[in-house]
Length: 172
Image (cartoon, rainbow, N blue to C red; front, side):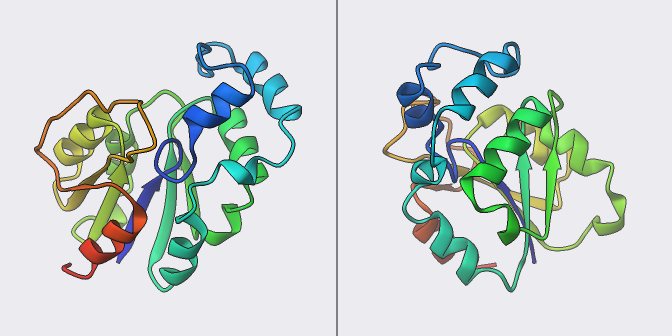
């Protein structure tokens, strides 16, 4: 099974990272240099991975794990490399400013194969469902994060951590 997993707010506590580095009000898509500067002085950013991230990735390595991330490509790539988990994925998709479903849809060689997409963003989840209806979309809604928590749309299965997601995976 292919599992597409979002990075920010799903595996990585981006809210805490931005707060501790003083860029909580900065869009890293619009101002990547400010974010690169914060990243270069942040020290070990692996500490911003959610506590369940590494165990989940290691225990699900028998699946095809694909990291998919939205944002400035070089900034995202550097941040993910610095987090220390890039090697745990079979592949990585950097979508820049494109919606994730639109990017995945172009890869038709896997169309119809059982796949799951985990993301916190309703816009990305909706786009994936519309672009790739053969992929099951699941919303990550972590209790530790305020980003998007005000959106209570219930169109997707919802989990609040990777342990719940692992249990959900067993039903597929």
